[in-house]
Length: 115
Image (cartoon, rainbow, N blue to C red):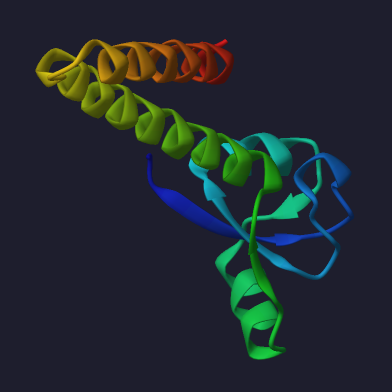
């Protein structure tokens, strides 16, 4: 993950689930893009003033979803590796068949995540 920055939200940004008056903590590129369209104030004074008023600090919903998807993908990869290891060590055909089925399901779920 790249460095995060903080800015004051000037107007509601539905795509990121941001509301005017909040402070958003997001990737510097996201902050820059939203500031360029006039949705955020990146000046230190504006951020400091909002903090002093107790503005809520939130994350971009888009970035949170991206991070969650990456975490889910990593978890599926670990699960798949564990299943493959168990399959290689299976002592009987029934267990091997059950693990093969679970491997196929996990591969499908992983493919959906990376698509």
